[in-house]
Length: 238
Image 1 (cartoon, rainbow, N blue to C red):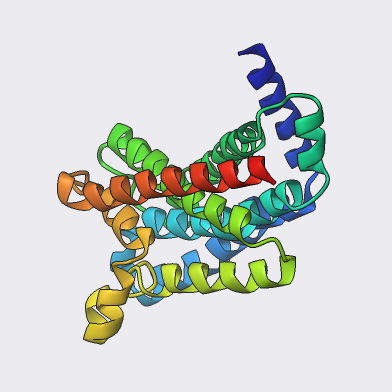
Image 2 (cartoon, rainbow, N blue to C red):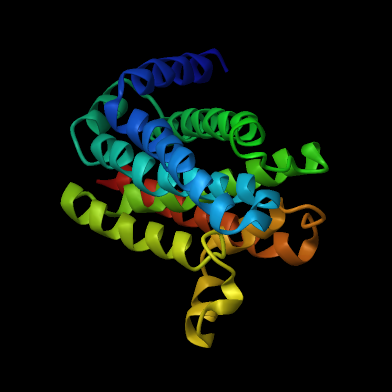
């Protein structure tokens, strides 16, 4: 347990110095929030009731799909993996510590949005904050699960960036956070349901925490865990 806590603390220090994580978990999402929050609430005043959930989905998606995978690819696609093996450190420890550290950073970023939105844009706070934070935690975990798969599968940084964008952009455009999903053509509406952002957004809405919005996220997370375990086992055999 002490080894795990030391690993988490070390990863936290590395993340604080990481420009990539600073950009993807804090700077870009918060700038997007500050710019688009004013635009959304001016053009669509009714969006004040869902602004926090929308901005949170964008922040989590960027951090999980664009921020986490490069760090994993750098670790498991380089000699760092050999250092793990040479010192008898389980290969999964790197993934777990990065996962946990990214979770904390994303929670912090979302908390900033939650605090600032009512002050800056008169956004409406979620009625049931405990359920909101529980839904948020679930969505972050599921998104990081997908980001972990990307980081373990794709070793080339250029390809990883392209693939991560292919996951990130549809998550934002088709989830309903930018405009109602009902305005999309039938094909795109169905496609949007494939991405966890669609379900995570609805899970965080007031009275949205229900099995109908939760089951798909649980399924995706379970599949992500299985795939990551298989990929790490293959890494061990190399």
